[in-house]
Image 1 (cartoon, helix red, strand yellow):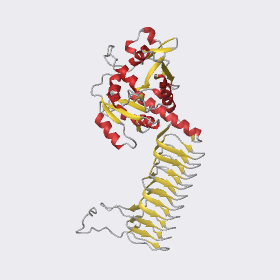
Image 2 (image 1 turned 90 degrees about the vertical axis):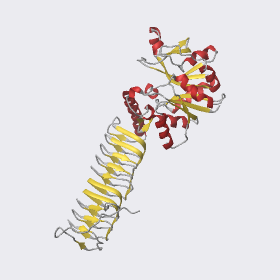
Image 3 (image 1 turned 120 degrees about the vertical axis):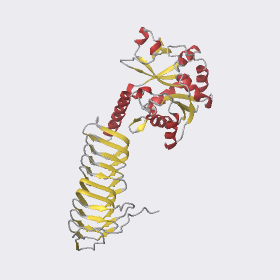
Amino acid sequence: MSLHAIILAAGRGTRMNSALPKVLHTVGGRPMLDHVLDLAQASGAQCHLVLGHGAEVVQQWLRKREGASPSIAEQTEQLGTAHAVAQALPGIADDALVVVLYGDVPLIPPQTLAGLVDAAEAGLALVTVKLANPTGYGRILRSFGRVFGIVEENDASPQQKAIDEINTGLLAAPAGSLKRWIAQVRNENAKGEFYLTDVVALAVAEGVEVRTVEALDAEAVEGVNDRLQLARAERFFQKQQANQLMRAGVQFADPLRFDLRGTLSTGRDVFIDVGVVVEGQVSLGDGVRIGAYTVLRNVSLGANTEVLSHCVLEGLDAGEACRIGPFSRVRPDSHFDDEVHIGNFVEVKKGRLGKATKAGHLAYVGDARVGSDVNISAGVITCNYDGANKHETVIGDGAFIGTDTQLVAPVTIGDRAFIAAGSTITQTAPPDQLTICRARGQKTVPGWKRPMKKK
């Protein structure tokens, strides 16, 4: 059978108290719906997305999302889960196998979905879980171990409410059978809705065996209806990521205080302190150490590089044995060769720093190509922006840039040049010589015109 996934994402999400559609709230830095689509597409399923409230916003997000786009069915009136599934069924052949997923249940393990699909070959399959407190969930009704129905909380008797096995909502069945059962569902219940769970009793009435797959972790199949549940999903997701990384050899100061909002690949003996946030694609070589409360976004760090606390690194490709921080900021399109050291309150933007170059503290290096063994002292600024356009600074190997120097780009500093402290350099500084340029008095230039952006 071909596999089709119907993903329900039409709910209003009133309890989120948000203008954003519920399924676009994030877990692990990605919308919940993105997790579900990835899961379904990884299983080989063709996806059908049922939208309602906030449909236009969700479709705007879908247009930007990478990967195959699902087909869209719209549920203009939210009349229940069976009604929602019915909106997508006409586009699915009767001989296909359908799995029903939810845009606000983002963390289903792939093995649970695979087990559900396998179990559905008998005709109808459900994912269930046992809860110490099942309040609010539909209960699984069994007789001599065999499922014969599901009763919703609002319609359950006191005896039925004592049942601890609950319905997660995840369901799989042949499309033709599902179409037939849904056509018979009625809304004669406390909420006046068409419940998808009613297909269970209809299947049993036809003599169809209902199989169940028990989820081993309730948190993995829990839906998100409010901010509290969203926070629980986030912590569960982060715990999973930390556990996987620790199995791969990463040491955490505290795995409960770590956030992965992208992908992280690591070498051996990596250490990550508390409060670290990883976003985008990050790679850490052997022996890398990341200090507390640091943000890494699209960063690659070579072996034995150390990042001290409270740094923000974005778009950096660094070599081996570099030392960064504390309180350093690196902005996109920056590259450090081996053994580069930038210290506290140093900012680098679109800078290429050669081997063993140092900027210990209180410096800005922007739009610059810096050679090896360069010393950039405190208070040094590359003046790369003239108010309209950016310009490049080039610093040769072995140069020494003295404290409180301004390098007004475009400008070149020769190899082993020595720039005296307090200088404002506007012209090429020759190699192997001392260059000094200090103001002798303030003056105003008449008739000056502000630079304009280049067309």
